[in-house]
Amino acid sequence: MDYDPLKLFGLHLVELRKRLGWSQERLSFESGLARSYVGGIERGQRNLALTNICKLAETLGVSPSEMLNFSNLDALSNENYPAS
Amino acid sequence: MDYDPLKLFGLHLVELRKRLGWSQERLSFESGLARSYVGGIERGQRNLALTNICKLAETLGVSPSEMLNFSNLDALSNENYPAS
Image (cartoon, rainbow over all chains, first blue to last red; front, side, top):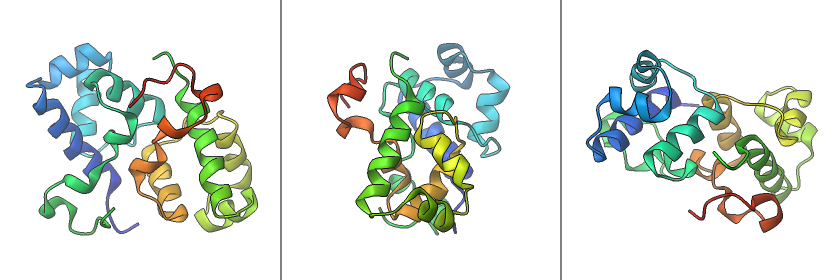
């Protein structure tokens, strides 16, 4: 893989969270995931598992599929990501 | 969550694999994931992490987002899954 899924997931999670106007604390509270863990995911430092991806999706009100929809991230972060 | 992400992921993986006419052995060989691990994922018994989801996506030639696109699974397996 010539892109970093953790980094892209983190960037996309920040985008989805901010769309709702939520802080990391709010996302932590709503999802039940520890605030430090949410911070680590957003920094691209956590290789989170499928159930947590789906828990975040449900919390943010998006489909699990949208959680991995990296195609809309800005080019800078996405230079190697294949066009979907 | 009122649906089982591991089960749906497994069912969808079988679908994607069979679309290519691949055996579990072939998917194991192409992805580099152990054959037993692939079998466990398909049976809904593995809570696999983001990097392995993206590795499977790349191997199967689909986007990471498609790996979590459970909306097309047949109703039987999908009775609780929210319409996306």
